[in-house]
Image (cartoon, rainbow, N blue to C red; front, side):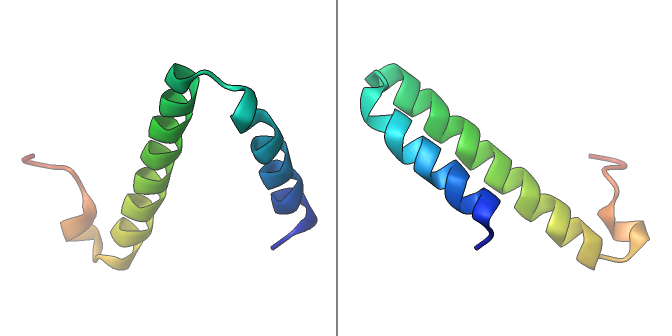
Length: 57
């Protein structure tokens, strides 16, 4: 883990207890969405070009 990653995690760990339940839920939803997008992009890179597009969907 890079120093930048560690700093980000420290900042989140410090801010999370101060957040309202709504803000925690919003943060979690945003983080999950970003993770799913990243996973989808990684999977799309593994598929041949004819299969990776969104044509016909």
